[in-house]
Length: 397
Image 1 (cartoon, rainbow, N blue to C red):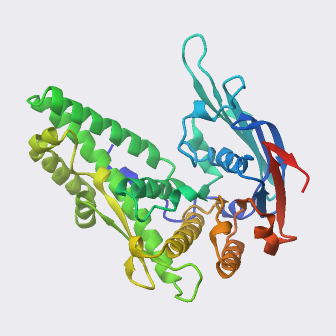
Image 2 (image 1 turned 90 degrees about the horizontal axis):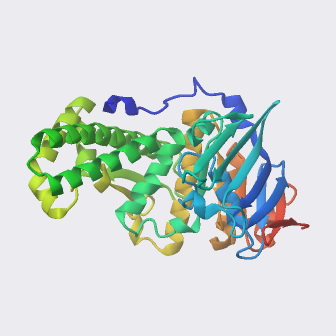
Image 3 (image 1 turned 135 degrees about the vertical axis):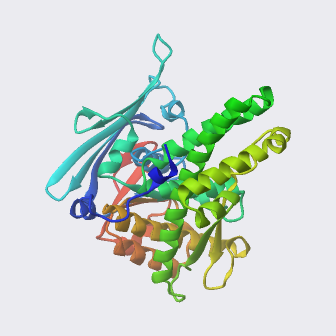
């Protein structure tokens, strides 16, 4: 594998953009998922508002939808932990997707360990077995925003790397496999440095793998970041309720791939790894590479670091960033993503709430939102399916 294989889609030539624009999730079925023993929900409008008390299971439904994207869903939870307490130990989630005249049925689930001790993640598309959730990306993309992101700008760099990798995954479904492979290679190098620091042949081999994977990850992150930054810059407006963000990547390998072609960057990174063996062995970890990069975000209109903005400004900046990402996904993949927003409207003043609904209306994809207060969605009257969730069940509104 070489870094040149990390390129992500650059246009919509290979995507069914017409189907993407008309995509709707029309039915969601959850069996033994979280607190939903047997839920069957049918909707049809572009906006779906899930309302109910805290703990009713609203976010669980967003998580169920998020499982149809690469990765572990919006909570990044283990599959076994998603199974309903008191159930058989597994779960199943299925969705019906309508795109114009076409209709797809997709499903995923988890089977608990059997007599052989093995568990299984199951994926199906129109009745046929799919190898992994990556297969859903052929006609479905999902983006989301949850309260877990609220401290993103002032939190550790690792949180922003995971956020960035989620942005990349929405346009490049294979990115997760590269990141996972890189993490395994780094663990192998760290262990080798600790146990056999003088084994130059094995270290050369593992560092070659780390360099190839590291440059591929860095290039994919850089391409998505630059494209998103350009899209934001082209449409920036200081009068909008959600301030525009300026983005850049900061890190030693990010500097390399910004200057050198992929193969040259691999050679230089591999040399840096070799020269840094003693330092990395003393530290117990690899101190250079994409695992140390940071996504640097600035509040555009004020030209200040996002971390120094007020809590309200950071929330608005984050919402604007996620909305811009949804537009980027459609521009690059030709598929308007499903947008999942967990408890977003509750933290906005009336002006920004109205601006949120206006911005969402400009997107082509379906939007699922949660909120404890039905009044939050009053402006969507007649345009949204409002669904009451009570103790894991759908109740009359």
